[in-house]
Length: 434
Ligand SMILES: Nc1nc2c(ncn2[C@@H]2O[C@H](COP(=O)(O)OP(=O)(O)OP(=O)(O)O)[C@@H](O)[C@H]2O)c(=O)[nH]1
Image (cartoon, rainbow, N blue to C red; front, side):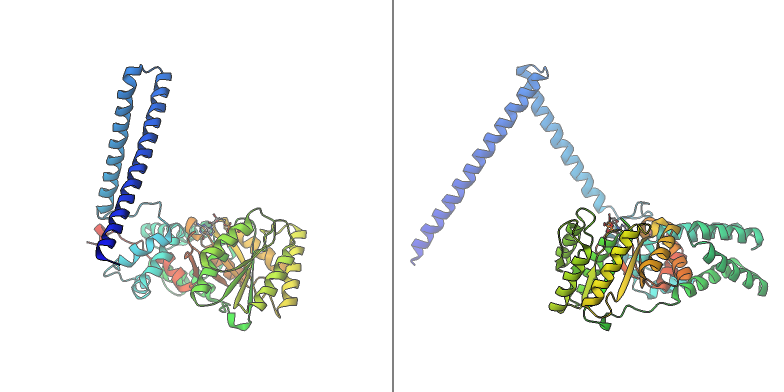
């Protein structure tokens, strides 16, 4: 093709584009004019004289634009201003805080063991955990610090106050009694100082959390079947989505079974999570037999040779016998299709329900057998001590904790990091450190 022909085509193309823009501008102008006339009519109906309505209209438009510009400038200025104060009490989502956490410098010269670990551990992970547990931390460390700080010596009255703090942070009566016994034993052998109290509590809580925890062995079966149970609204579906994402990231193939056919839109919610993590979901219509979903999901998992099948279940109220019977049926169906399935029944508990979570755990354990716990919503509660109560009183491993609603806000439970996050002194602001 000749050079001149090409130029001609280019001019023609530009001509079309200009025409298109002109047309578009004309349409826009017509629409604006129409809107203006409608507003004028409306103003007239409100009693504004016809000759003044245009002036009022332009004045309103001027005010609106000024307001928008002021808002825009204010937002830009706010973003540019360096952060010097303490973080606001309403924390942003844990995922959003990640980047900030990476940039945070470790506190210099702090002598406590917790801070040493804080420097050693990958900071962003610890920071996420610390921020997620901020409320429980304040209920425990904050109050402990206040009591120990003002006490001249640790006597019976101070121990009584400590006991109350542990109960309030939902460690449960049994666990609190065990912790108090440990403190009293230490008091008999040596003088109990504030530092010793913190050290004893830290050691004892860690020992309770570490007992009986065996890691989840996905390679034990292919497919490995995880059944997720729990009462309404504790975060089962969300947890399944987060788990699917984590296992996907580890390179495992995952399939989800939407066994919650009871709650309207539960399967839809799971399907959305499936789309987000690019994981297929086996679902039936609402009200279908959950055991039938489990059957189809198990068949599909075997046929597709996936590594992991996660089956959701309806939020069962542990008091409803027929729902528990339904759960047993799901167990039977899965076991028939895949040897040993479900290989793990994960019970999801909402940490903010405190001791009620412990009651649920007991009932589910009796009814369907529970292999491990996922403790959700730790970010929004001061009742995180319930994690210790569950481990100590039921001997059930807390496998994961939920510290936010984001897809990455589910953490494999690390007892040491958890305890450090509870006992670490509050992070100091930039201004305080300098
Ligand atoms: N803050 C916070 N919210 C969470 C966490 N986990 C779940 N949620 C929220 O809890 C609410 C309930 O979660 P779902 O996953 O729908 O709970 P569910 O157990 O499946 O509910 P049912 O299907 O009714 O039984 C949702 O708004 C979740 O975003 C968490 O770790 N932290």
